[in-house]
Structures are given as C-alpha cells and as structure tokens.
Length: 199
Image 1: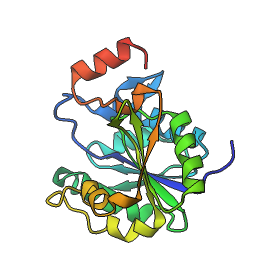
Image 2 (image 1 turned 90 degrees about the horizontal axis):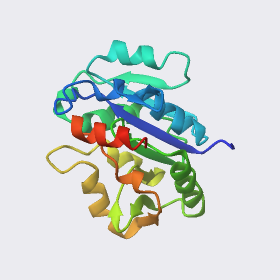
Image 3 (image 1 turned 90 degrees about the vertical axis):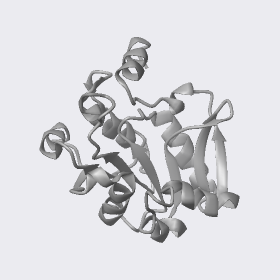
C-alpha cells in the first residue's frame, strides 16, 4: 500500500450516552472499535492519524498502544464534536493535502478510504463525500485549502455542515456500492444489528 498524502482526525472523545457504554471500546471484527478504526485508516496508507480522546481517555489510550497514532485530549468534549475537530486540527500535519474527518462510531472501510484518496489525488480541491443509493455517508474529506475554516466551526453554526454549505460547489459525491458507509452505531440496537450481520 502506498502512503497517502491525507491526514485523518478520528473523533473519539464523547460520552456515548445513548449507547450506555463507551462506543470506542465495543468489539468490532476482533478488536475494540477504536483500534479497528485506526487499523483501517492505516491499512489505507494514511500515516498521519490524530485520535481525539476525552471521556475515559486513559483507557482508550491503552487500546492504541503500539500504534503510531497521535493522541490529543479534549477536556471540553461535552461541548460537542466541533471542539474535538478544532483540537484535532492542531495535532495534524498541515502539509497534508486533505483531511478525513471520521467518527469512532462510524466503522470505516479501507477500500472506501483508498477510493477517496485516489479521487482526491485527481481532484485535490474538492470536498469528497461517499454516497450509497443517493444517501451521503462517511467519512468526509476536506481539501487543505479549507483547513483554516475548521478552526471556525461551532455547534451553533452546524459544524462541518456550515463548510459544506458554504462551499457546496466544491462538493464531489463519490458513489459506492457498499452500504456500510451509512452505518452509524448510536444505540445498543444499532450495534447489535450490525454485529449480527458481521459488518
């Protein structure tokens, strides 16, 4: 696998209140979900990975022992994802050509990440969003020319949505046949259904 010029901010700071247990520690394909996510990202050739931790940060850090992921802590994680994205921005390589914004509760696929990376290389100024059957999924890829705008996002202005709306002409929808880009593990029922299907 050739190295990617992308960075990735992995958001794993939240309390997981709807799940009733820490999402990042759920089992997924033989690993904790956070370890699975990092492995998937790195298997796609992305070396610059920043994991933003908050709730139970010490325990989650131990799950990443032995990996080259950079760990940063958001002490204000209860304020929402925007604060974690801003903190992750400070930890990432600003020389990267684009950044993937990924959430720990949305299992990633190396094949999709590689496809996004390839599209980014051919169109480095576009916002890339994977789509399945007309539905937008995850993760989102922002080009480096929009990096400074990540520092301006707030929960009040709808976070990443505000950037996508402002730069809607830059959005490129990447079609994929894999429905797993829509998977979001919010509740125990979500997790149990997905786990039974061995996704």
